[in-house]
Image: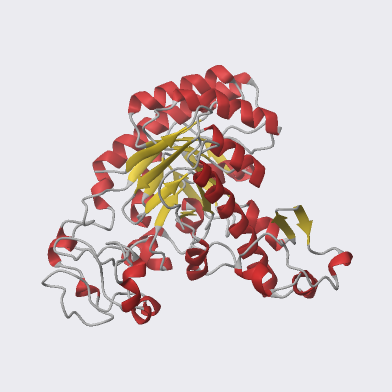
Length: 446
């Protein structure tokens, strides 16, 4: 069984609030996904991401394949376990990164040969190899291998790129369907992330602060157990009394069955077609016929004007199944992700909040703020007076500016935490208003 997608509310404008049930997390959508290219959201520790309310992050197949390698990660229990991330994760296919190596790659019908940007070594990525790498990494969601179309691209180039993407999508799906059982949640391996759930597990799990916490929630652990990265003891008759620090607290039956709920890794197809409406339509319709678990709109934010990005999203969204998640890749500024969410996009990611942070650009309720500015040298106010993140609650603009000008590593961390808090807050606000309609019933996610 792959993911579940349960729509809770829809609006006339197309926005919707839903729950995306994945092996490691039930994700409240619409959701913004921080990008963790090399197994880390740059400068931000995993526990801080959790406290900010990040429900799902991204890993980059190309970069992780090159370093440390997908096979070492497989041997260490998968990417969740390797980076100590208990919540949901998505891995891209590597297609965009290979696309960006224009001077170092050669595209053929079979796949893409490229040279590593690290050491110049030669590698060959096919749809099947991309699936193998993503299965080894073991994210909740994998992406089909695609051929990203640059901007601008003439029609002949866009048509050829789409032809390859559709052929590679079929090969990705066929291979993934045949091999998804090899994801590390299955067979003799323990699950990448220990959770107090599975056959015989109690509805709640130990520790005073875990009383009443939902099954599968890391908050169900006692503080000391969380700090050590494992439950003190976990439910089920054969798990009772298992020593703290022992992954054998999982019941054998849960291990043998893979994920306790029988869930598998999901695979999304990627709509391409350049900036041509008819090619985008053809791409969407052909991918829907293949019946992926979800659908992404790729090939955007590659230099095209914003109104063209919006046009392509508006063209494709109505063509995608309403009962499956819809993901726009690599966007955007805070006002953009809010607009797309209100149109009915369920998932978005972008490196912008952390990349901008490292250059001193902060996103605030008062607009963009360049913390390097001289006028902030003695400003004792927070970066954003309307923000309640840990950075705005504690540090002044003057201090953030000082860190930036001093080249202190803490600068990137604090700026990134604030920007991520702002982005995640935008999505939380959209969820609370269900895309512009009256407030939905039920508590909002984190």
